[in-house]
Length: 610
Image (tube, one colour):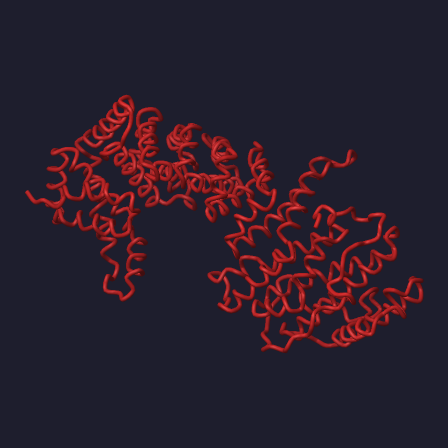
């Protein structure tokens, strides 16, 4: 199927080729009535459709007959040309229009669908009959638009999604997406957005049962089986590639285009929330990605660009293939370019703040692989993050988080290269250790009450310090003599930082260890569900406690001076050295296998008394 052919001009000079859902235009078979449920519609209700037969195309079979006498010479679609099945359907609709419906149940949904199919059948017939005379089918187009929007009422009744499938709603919506009038296609797009909205499909934010969720997923699957993804791609491509008319205002044209593209992105986002595997299909089966990355490279801020960055972050989280493809296409450079605009200034308004947050989220996703870390280092991302932290603007909040992700040990060689570059070239220690020591927390809290969290700041700072020290201090890393020398220099700089100013950074680590240990201890360890115990402990800061234990263990291994100080401080706090080893042992039980040997090597330094 050539998808491009499905999107034609609003009033083409040729006969419509849109196929009916059945040879007669009738909807699928009727359904058995289900338990009714009172609902409140957000946008439309069943009663929104007038019951007056004199209202244009809504008049059922009688209106069709009238049109057959006055306007239609060919009786293929109206008048005597109606089949018995079509007459039966129109009769059912006429009867249904006289019924007052306050609750959406299966019967009411069938009423909505019958009206919809009646409007669709008449519009297709008139378009085929009068392809060059828009005045002959414009009224039916208005009716079809209204009936299409009435389908959004299904969003208020998640229990009826499976019934909607059997009634043919997915096929009907797809037929509208490929309608010759783009306004009708946009209406269908909006309806699909409503029916797959997060308020409907997210069980954490809506009272949706398991079976209802399965029905919603089945509904989405039915849409995808009707080539929804390819139709969305074709529509998006059409909008992106369209040339503005010479007499049109460029700004107004761009705004209108972006508004339409936003609706396509909304549907994509909703679909990804239902089916995470869709990210791979978008990458491999469509041409969305080149358009997304091209838009992301634009310098000026637009809400559409911000939305694309957010959508790419979601896709990169869901799919390693998407993440790798983005890295290969230079997404790390593009995101750093976005962030650089906020190095010395704060976002002007909430949209810019969201844009900044989305960019940081995408960058953290890209840093989830050693290839992304390498691209980040090569693009001087460390230097940019250091400047952002020193500038003390809103971007500082995300920059310290990025440093944590960038220095994670995903690949031993890259971790060492990153640490050496951070310490010896990017001067990261000058900005990280002040955050580690709690500098500017009050100032940041006052300036950015809604965005700033002091505990997140300190957790990212602790992890970054541990990542760097672990990379340069751990044995067993191969390399050239020059690389070994640089690594040794970086290690010496790190240890000097902990020794300066009366070992204040070691003391800070002990204070935090005591504090986090007390927090984690508040979790009831006698719960039957061990997994829940672990999750509760993580919520209280178990990971940061483990990082602090690892930091103390490395310091004890590297210097007798540090070992004596740590022992003294632990004794002063009434904590046995074995407590640090116990935390490490617990961490070993959940750690990445690549980290096990590293932790075990240092843990033994805390198990010997004296």
